Image: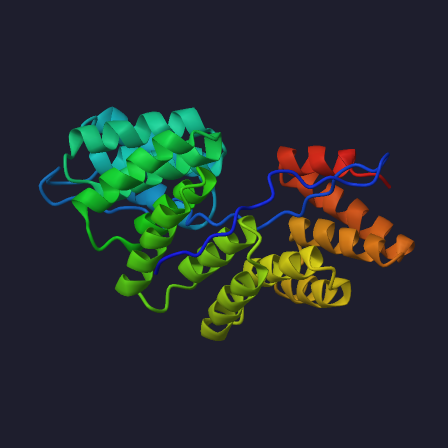
Length: 298
């Protein structure tokens, strides 16, 4: 679809002496592939037992054990591209972005047609804040697999970050053409419209996503952000409540609900939410959110 874009406000000022508040949208990237890769048939004849054990440990969320098994695998089969990809996923989940990128790069160097490794590499670059490198990785993924809807969505999010809004919308449209039930692409469209202050369009996108799947805490959080921006604080709180009902550990939703309560003068509720958001953000090692909460006037 073509965008009728109005120029977004570049800076929102606040009353003198009050820090500018920003709400926290959900991360709109599809993250590193949750399922690990099995070996490509042409790579090895017999897989080392450690490889299968690493996959099992990863599936159970035991990343340190998975890392040990993949290290053993690569000691015995140093040319197994899938083991590099899967070890990269472990590093990604541990927040070790540079190590993840090194492993994904080794994976697609060993296996020339490996769109998933390019996709995962893009996610790691994005997590590091290198949006241009992430965009290049997602482009490689869709070049190798033109039906990779998740890669189109993530590349669209890179374009959004770079304020190339029409290119972003084109990618989201491609993702939805490939998978009309792809709720994350609908959320991404909503995030784009939110970023350019087209709030009615953002609400419509989040609503459509929630019609497809009502069990999305991120979509409720982001729809709450739109209502917060519109001054509809009670509606914002209702949406944050729904997000937290689905994910009780959602630090951003607590933070945003705290902001909404503060705008309504509900100071005890605001303080409780901001405290809970800070505790969760610290436990989750979400350093960006920790810094933002600490800078928020109480």
